[in-house]
Figure 1: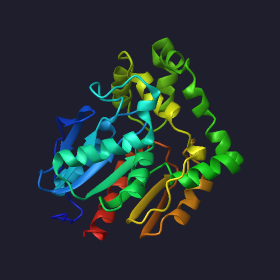
Figure 2: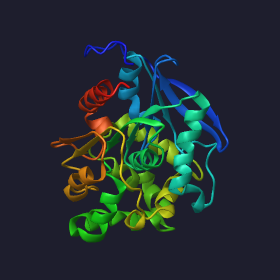
Figure 3: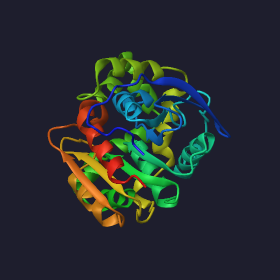
Figure 4: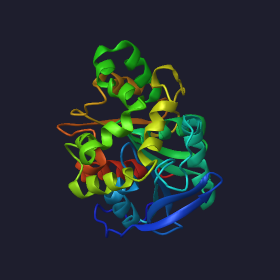
Length: 291
């Protein structure tokens, strides 16, 4: 239970830890008491756990135990070289392995971008483990796949995915002081976060591992089925990668309690561009579904 939902929180500084799992040790940031309500936050591409800094602080102050790992390929100790090692089912396994480490029988799951894709799949396959789902930017994967196949607007928005799958993608993104990589974050991501992300991705093998997520998965031919757990989906109108077709169709793929929030004049980078709004919505969602 969230102990003091009053609208005001004493932010807690996130702590760095490593989480041992069968796949290796995940780097992670945590905030809040370890006996608090467990909340797992999954970052997207091309970012890291630090994207959740604001949410970690507030959740920790609300007596949750919030954990944000650097996911597979982003944590140096969990950086396999083969594309097949980044299949969606293995990313879901990582979520469960992290939960097992902490002894969580049930937990609240939050994801943005690729983290949202993993969160949708985890909630679909393991509804007994996920208390609530909060997906940010990326819609239900079945709705997204259908839009990629049939909606010309979404097809055009997703054209970049093929470029990311190219063997030349790493070199292109990192050329000229990572000029093209830096452009991805505009607008919305604070400069100090951009600098942090770029430092991470210039490490040998780091960007290749992150891009292997795209190479290992095809959104247009993978179905996960309906979501039965309480779900909050947050989408923004200025998202260049995700159009309204899949966003609006997501409601058709959630059979449990569902809330859709549309943020006007906000880009794809919701957790960092609109942190207060997202955190408020997340806390409301958690409080509404305590059990």
